[in-house]
Image (cartoon, rainbow, N blue to C red; front, side, top):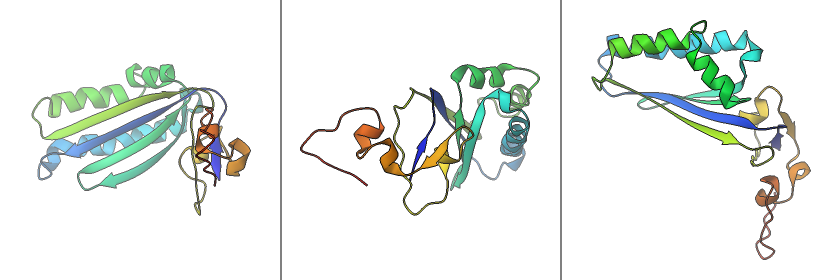
Length: 161
């Protein structure tokens, strides 16, 4: 199976790292802020969040988010009506440059049909689970990874699923 979504979209990775895990009073606010933001975004589909996947590593949580546009993502981050801006101000006040808690993010703008995804023996997952996305047989987007990314595959390297 694969995912299909029409138009440009954004993949936003965000996480935190417990640099000093014993300092719960420093990281608890940041740790609990993201679930509140996700609930807020779920109530406002026009904000642009299409879906997300949460995981937790040995040093902290990571979220993979799918957004309709980078403009909507940035609007959410800056708009004082949403929980992000006050949470970020509190993080800066509580943690600042102390090094106790790390926060990171990466933003990737994906052009229409310039992505590839494969889900083998998986339920609807990741991008395929995002609002506005379809979950469909992989060959509907092409026989090779390059075709599914909108590129052409070298003739001598046929790879298909």
